[in-house]
Length: 287
View (cartoon, rainbow, N blue to C red):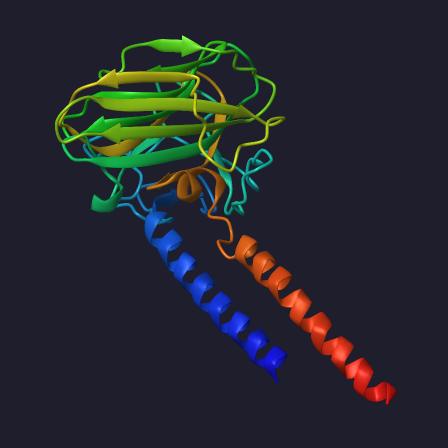
């Protein structure tokens, strides 16, 4: 009877703990915007899929004009190891590149980067080009139509740029494999804001926690609200799986099952009880 009660107590405690941890993790890790390009053909002003957006895609920052991305390749660009997201839709590309913007899309209120408040935003996307020496990526713009932050590649290096960050290049960006870009933006109500860029190759494993050292980082001060994303590139390329979130889990690697480690611990705690029950049952049958 004692063993049975102890087993029941372990199950109740573990179930409650798993529920609590799951709720806390879900609250702390929120995906606020996603675009998987689940459209049957090129982008149009009717392309309004995904989540966390306040507009469909347009050519210009002021929500005018048809976007110029007319090439959709079936299926998604693959993620490197360590990313647990399941890609959806297709992948968008533009064979002509600059001066043709792929287009702009406005973020809903929860996804905007308000540099005048205390907040953290993470952003990730997949980028591929068939040839080295091409610039391209995503950028964040403000409502006045100014590109404030750009994340991507510039020729053969990774590139963090824009009005707030200046021009910063580092590392080597190969043109023969897809790239996975991770971004972190830390804003302060007063004081300095920070932006970080960490790229990953297809041969890399993305860590389950954010890096302690990022490839490129910049500090600046601003109170602007960055409320729209632009896709653009200098030549033929593809972009896929855009995410904006409140944590590394939500936007970069995927929220892991929060109960996994706890279930293992509970199972380990239950093993002695189960063994004790089996041993006692064996003794009773032997008499």
